[in-house]
Length: 320
Image (cartoon, rainbow, N blue to C red):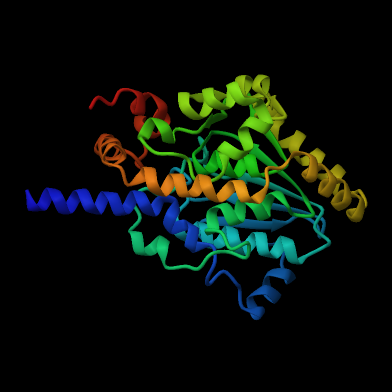
């Protein structure tokens, strides 16, 4: 019995780390030393273990998630992403940034639900004063540069939330799956979809996606307005690259000014992000969430296989 209780609390701490801990991860140790920055600037690309930043030109950058087998995002990836957002903010020459994946089947599966609590909670809030997950989502939305997400494979949880924070989303018609599965797992999403989705696709469809917690394929996501377009998989890369090159050829100040005015008309106030985060922190500590996540872990969560491929089906079949 004592061993079971320890396991239960370890699971609780791991789940809380999902986004609470990551909230701190973005703040501290996110700056690359100046020598490293100089080396990065001298090269066309820089590769870390988990994320690849490629400068296709001074105006066109590409950020590729490369954490096989599932593209799980955890504390180390959050640090890298915060660093990259900071680099984009600091370089006025960047006009367009494309986010994509090098892992077959996954854009981003979801946040790391099994990382130790201390790995995620040892960092300070980001520059906005919020926990770093909503902090980076807000900063990503407000970049001067235009941002495009190319979705091939699953974009669940924080993967969906990052896509929503970007300016444009394009999806593989055959291979994309968009999902906010969290309510099915017993807790509230923490990266801002409650603030963004109703403005993007309407209240009823937002409730369907967030509370129904189903996966949407590329075609349905296009029909609902979640993605700009769903394209045949063979055409996705070429289309996104051509659009990014087109934007990169335009005047940077005109892009920034137009985006700033579009943001005023369409983005949720930054103040709406923290309440969603707080709701996540509260909900993830409930026994019901602990039990549901434990069941998913026992079934094979965060391992290659059927659970990650069909996450929404496994959350729906849980019985108390």
